[in-house]
Length: 169
Ligand SMILES: [Zn+2]
Image 1 (spheres, protein in one colour):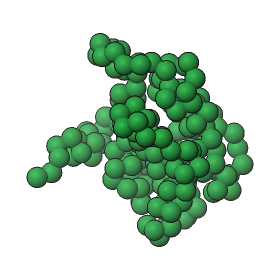
Image 2 (cartoon, protein in one colour):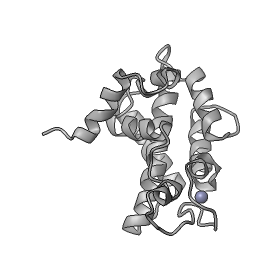
Image 3 (cartoon, rainbow, N blue to C red):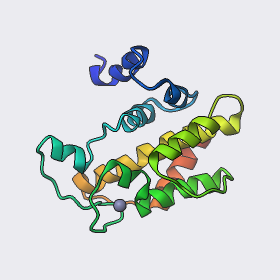
């Protein structure tokens, strides 16, 4: 049976709930469905970061588990104020030969929307890699919080490059 939660994003896209300007980014060819789902959640700011959990009155340790500094884990910290996230995304940009500094979430989305599209392979890969990066940051956060497992940003980066090669991007 299909998972109704996983069906929801696509359904909601057609309802026009996602801002149209981000729709082309989320719907890029080659983005894995699980990456697409997390990217969509992130764009909606619906990933259950500490600040969101607090609104639901769920108390968890507040500090970011990625940079391990005494900084509250918020959406904006994770994407991309955090040194871990920033080094992962900057590393991926470097791999794709983009020389630019990493900005905040909203500015990164704007830049991605302007630069990632299906017009040529390089522009498509950019979107695929961005979706994978957001997914890996979220998974690393979950692995550290709930599984007590840690991986370096460079190992996550390696996984992303392998995935891009395997999917023939
Ligand atoms: Zn951090």
